[in-house]
Length: 359
Image (tube, rainbow, N blue to C red; front, side):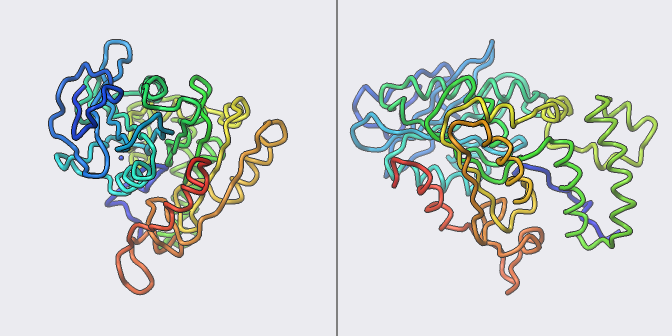
C-alpha cells in the first residue's frame, strides 16, 4: 500500500535563576529546581527559570520578561501532543515555531510562560511518555496560577495560546484559572473518537491510497478505535486478538492519556468560560478539525455562551505554522514549486490581532 507507514499518521500534535534579568527585584520568581542545565538568553528581554509543584513533582517554567517597567500583560503557551522540551537554550532540539511566537510576544511587551512537561528539560517526576492527560493538565494549571501571581504581570490581562492539543487543554484550564483571552489553532472541534476517524481517513487519501484501499484500511482502524476508545481495552489486550491493528495503537502519548482525551466533551467546557475565544484554522492544516466541524461546533456552543467564540480561517497556513497553500503541500512538506515549506511570518500578525493589548 502507498501509505506513509514509515512514520505514524499524524494526529493532533506537533512537541529561580535569573538570566540577563533587569536589576529590579520585581522579576524574581520561585524556583525549587535550581540552575537550569543550560541558559536561554536574549538581548531583547530577560529570561527567568522557575518551577511549579504538582503533588511531589517539580516542573520547570521558563518565563520571558520585557526589558521595561511592568506590570505587563502575559501569555501562556500550551503546545501540542507528545514529549518534547520547550527550552530554547540550544541544549535540546528547539521547536522553532514556538520560539518565534515567544520572541514576538515578548518583544511586543508580553511576559510569556512555557511549562516543561514532566521528565522533559529540567522537570522532574514521572517520564513524560508515562503521564496521563489529567496529570499534564495539572501542570498547566499550576503554571497559569503562578504566572498570574507574579508581581510583574497584570493578572487581569493574561491570555493563553493553545496549539493543537493545547487547544483541548485550554478550555479545561480556564475553568480552574480564568483568563482574559484564549486563542487556539489547529485543534479539536468534535469528540476525539469522531475526529480520529475522519483524520485518519483524510490522511490515507492524502497518502495516495485509492478509495477502495482506504475503505479496507479504515475497517482495521475502526475496529481498533472502538475497542480502545469506547471499550477501554489496553493495547496489549487488543493486539492479543487483533495483531493487524498494531499501527493504530502507536500513540505519541501513554495509552491512558489517549483514553482520557477521548472521554472529553469540550463543548461543555467552553460554555462555562466567559473568556474571549478565537479559534483559528489554516487552510493547509490536514491535522486539526476542519472548517465544517468548527462551524458546527461553535454554532452549538454559541447558542448559550455569553461571549461568542469567533472562528477564522487563515490563508496559506498549515498545522505547523508553515506557509502551505493546500493540505497536500503540508502533508508532503513541499510547495508546488518544489521548495521546502517555511514558517509563515504573517501568522504572527494574525495572533496579534486577537489580543486587545496588541491592537
